[in-house]
Image (cartoon, rainbow, N blue to C red; front, side, top):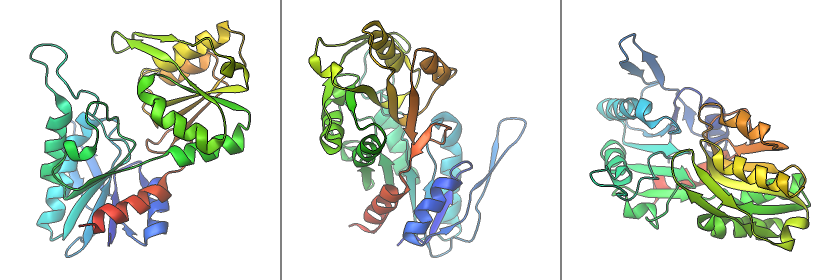
Length: 297
C-alpha cells in the first residue's frame, strides 16, 4: 500500500485526485535551484518504514533526471521501504533505434537509469513503437495505464457528431478503440516525418470525413506540426473547424498558439502534463495503476 505520495512542483492538483482515491498522504517534494544550476531536493516528510510514490511528469527529463535520482536516494537513506515513480508522461521513449551512425539509443539507456533509481514505475500511454511493452525496456515492474476510455467519454459527451482522425498508421489501434467506445466513425491519415518540425500529412479520399465534426487525436503534441498540417488540409477541404484532443500536452515553444492559428476550434488534453488545455483528468486511472504495480508480485 502506498502511504506517501510525493509530487514534484506543479503536480499537486493531480496528486490530490490520486490521494483521494488511495488514502495516501501527500508530502510535496521541494526543489531549490541555485544560481550555478545545481538543485537542492527536500522531502516533505519522514518516509521511514513507508512505501513512497514520487509523482513527476517527465516533460523536461534532462532538467528533472538528477532531482529524481536525488529524491529516490534520499528517501531510501531515510528509511523508505520502497520507492516508486509515477511518471504520467514518460520522456525519452521515441529514440528506440539507431537511425544514423553513432547515435545514442536513448530509450533503453534512460530506462536503465530509472531502474537504478526506483523499485517500480507507472506511466500513461507511453510512446512505444518498436518496443511492444515496457517490460522490454525495464527490469523493475513497469505498468502503463490507457487513457482511451477517458478520451472516448469526453468525446461522446462533448462532440456527439465526432469523426475521429488518427495522425498515422501507428495510431490506428488506439484511435479505433476510442472510436468504438465513443460510437463514432474514424479515419487514419498518412504521415511522413523528415525532421523534428518537418511533417507531411495526407488525408484519405473518404466519405467518412463528411459524417460530422473532425476530432484529431494525437498522443503527443510537441512541435504541433502534425496537428497543424492536418488542420490546414481539413480547411482546404472546407471542413468544419476541428477539435484537437491530445494525451500529452508537451507544446514546445509556441506550438499551442500555432495550432490555434491553423484553425483549431478547441484544444483539449489530459492532465498528464499540467497545461491550460487540460480537460480530461487521469487521477483515477493512475491511482488504480499505482495500486496494481506497487502491490503486485
